[in-house]
Image 1 (tube, helix red, strand yellow):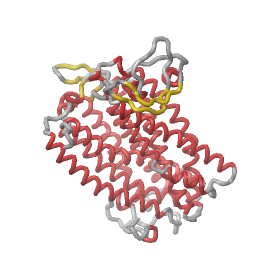
Image 2: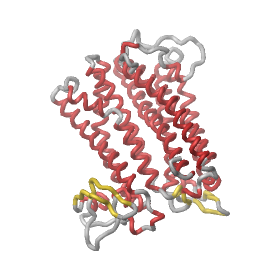
Image 3: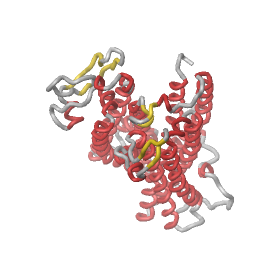
Image 4: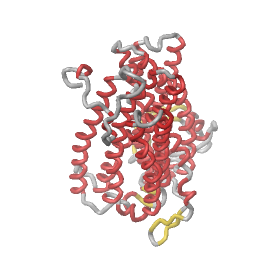
Amino acid sequence: MFGLTALELARIQFGFTISFHIIFPAISIGLASYLTVLEGLWLWKKDDVYLELYRFWSQIFAVTFAMGVVSGLVMAYQFGTNWSHYSAFAGSITGPLLSYEVLTAFFLEAGFLGVMLFGWKKVGPGLHFYATMMVALGTLISATWIISSNSWMQTPQGFEVINGRVVPVDWLKVVLNPSFPYRLVHMTIAAYLATALIVGASGAWHLLRRRDTPAVRTMLSMAMWMVLVVAPVQIAVGDAHGINTREHQPAKIAAVEGHWENTPGASVPLILFGLPDMTAETTRYALELPHLGSLILTHSWNGQIAGLKDFAPEDRPNSTIVFWTFRIMVGLGFLMLLLGLWGAWARWRNALFESRMFLRFALVMGPAGLIAILAGWLTTEIGRQPWVVYGVMRTRDAVSNHSALEMSVTLILFIVLYTGVFGTGIRYLLQLIARGPEPLDGHEPSPETGRPARPLSAVPDRLDTSIMGSDGR
């Protein structure tokens, strides 16, 4: 297919499927915590606006949680089908870590999810709030194990290779590997930011359509506070994560910066834009800011980092790709900070809900958090190449013995199926968001029928067609 090898097709297939998967857990992590805050505020202030928002966003959570579970199953199977040599080599670490995620997080979420979605008439307010908190805790525990497993692949420690297989010798070092704390905090904050931007965009959309209600105002206001507080924290965490990566994965940082070699005694410039050429070993059309690369990456005026020429050609990540994915992520991060500051200024001028220019910007920024997550993931994973376990196992040694034809056929099937299934799910989510929160008839949702229910039963059977145009959007 297009002259690609089976290895390249396997990587594309894994990247395609996980790109669909990663957005749903990210939204679930953010929404679960948001729902906890909403229910806590409702119990504290006795203001039904928070309950109205809880009911609305719990429907979105139910759909994203279901799609996250379905897409996650495919990821687990791919370890055995497309990456069997990796599973045989490092399964003694990856297998237990993923099992711990199921045992501690998924069971916790599944146990309390039913109470959270359908238990309003079954349990008291305090127990229902506890169930919501447990679901939120479950999403964070799940993220912890998944990030730990992936971080071990980035910065492996606590193991020995015996008879061609990884054997864990110190599980504490395996779990708490050097990049794990930075990546866990970075990803969790990214999920919160992505969710806040979606909530804020929803509020902005309704206000732009002249649907000005207390619930719409509240969710826009809460989202802007979240962006204002968390965006600068994420920038600081990203800086610390970059320093950690420079220490443990210097080739990745060199590729991200498009930096090829050092001049003795000279500082490292920050290349804002350019086109890294892996063949010519240079970054063409570079727009540089002197000393700024040293200041950001080493926190000194004339500090130096390793250049790509310090590594053998076969050990270099593809700088052409990660150079731009990283800049997309960082650029969106600063736009998020701008949105938070603009929201604070508009709030100070009592124009947060009236400034149409600001509301349009908030609406456009709605998907920015998810795009930044995908760009960051691509930077992390492509920047690790050519290693599947950094410095221990090369990616070419991890792939299963499939032909290019087999990988091409399965990739095409994945594209068709995912576009149909998850495209429909995303469209449904957008329709739910476009409908917006509805006023409450009472303090609690309608009584239950007594029948067992699935997560998707928490969303309405129909959507009001008045929110859609003649083309069905």
